[in-house]
Length: 542
Image (cartoon, rainbow, N blue to C red):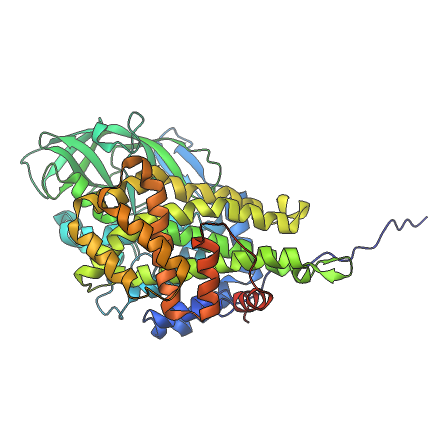
């Protein structure tokens, strides 16, 4: 007997084989506007590759088959190795080929290289976010290593700047590419690194470049398979920064004991480890007691990458939702043509418009060489962007999941993985409160910061009444912001900075629509039908 219970129809095809760059008109425009048009060809090529079904499958496999800690070999010899699915290694090859770990530091670097790197980062984040952790830490560490690389490892410089990924367990001077991790937090302190108990004692002389014996632990040791880590440890001179290689100059393993891998909510493709240092050998970077100052230089860059990563995840979630809505029919019409759904999708597109403009503008501020104005811009708006964008990502992906309904809640969809991935960027490198307190610190301690803000915002005064009202209100508060106001002020600052960019560069209806949605104190109001259509067209231009 033949049983035919039903025919499958009105089920949209999944989103694959699309160009992640050329289909994103706001990103294309921002790359050109912020001075990185020279990278357009590469971005279009990488966007096509990353949007392929094959690349998306690598992202799925790397998370479905997470890394495994192998502490001993069959003979009982200590290994302390992390083994990954082949998909991880293929993803890492692509990331290194895109130079996400060192593009900004090439000797022949193009102007505004941080803008090009930011765009590349956003594209890669849409495929697999866990593999971004090794490259973001390496990228932040290279400037510090260029000035403080210990003498026995001086021949690492070329490999740090290569476009090769090399996972072999061998000395760095024999490898084609190198990765650097970080280890800051401990069980008792977390963000409060001043409470770290790990200690370092000199083996001979004290001072920069000298060797120290390190005893202690790290509660989160990111990417334990890295060729070296930068860690914090207490010395007689205070909290200090150390270069801790995986292998010592003679090729022997350093005494870094991997205790277990973290069982995380998301970010499952990436290994995060608990470690103990049992007389490990490290090299002092800078002077004793300078650990916080040195690490803060790296912290800003990794925080910026957190915001870029969250934005990339949001962009992918929106693309999936829009692709579904353009195919799924309800009551004889596509979901994307239903007025209420169209409003939801257009509001998401508008949110992404603002984020794209702000992040690429911020990337330009991070590019070198920079003026004092740009340095202050990056210093203030990096923690602000991390706070606002990373926290916005969680409800954003949930909204995209609702567009698909039950099918978006199931693991066959990409959306559950994107949703689990979102919180890590809010937590890593400082939670929301830490970011807002950092913003408050620079507002209250750097008098020239207020002048920079005024220079940025006064140029568009009179262009939009919502902007003018909010800027006038905030300006009265900036001179004396209290700690309890830090979240609200941080959000307002980033909103106004975003509005200022859009009012300068975007079509007036789009800029006015953004100001109405995000600056009008009376709450969100419906966008016009024409603006809804324009936003959705720009969001899916190819």
